[in-house]
Image (tube, rainbow, N blue to C red; front, side, top):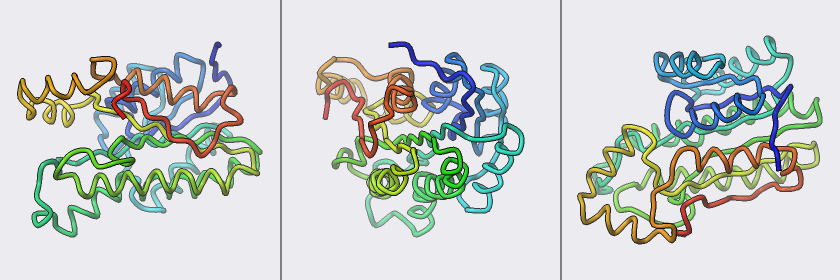
Length: 251
């Protein structure tokens, strides 16, 4: 099965590094015209230069910012076919007791992981409806399907919400030719935050984690990108509202 995206316009958020970058790179290699968005202006510019994409330095936590980004892409490229929301993360909130989580801590996690996904879908929906075509993929997490680690209350809650949003949008957008699916990664050492988390486990904790995975290895950003590209493809046109765990069998 050959997956190509020639003549397709794509937006990938969280694309400065890690999983977002891997997805964007795979899309470019498969023929898509790709726009990258990330709050890290320097990082997204470097990624864009490396892979041949268009960078947008933006915080997508407000409807105004998301709407302006979609409008800019449509004005320049004519449409938007593919939307991947890979932005988010734990923002350093790992291993903290619930009493230590402030309202600001809670809200910043939801802004990155859920709010931006909603606002982007809201802005992209009219464009995709008019075209009668669209693919939306969210990058959720195993933590959005079941309890996993202690001390990620806001992150786990936000990823559960993202899974719910994915399923609801699939129901609402399906009749207009728009599919909405999610990839739920297992542990992937794809950026500095995940690397710090990995090191915090120590040798014994790392060994236990790897031994809990059927394939006996950690995932890579490319493993997640491969799953995302399938959901974005023509071949996945009758698949929507699904959450695919890409975690080496751990779930």
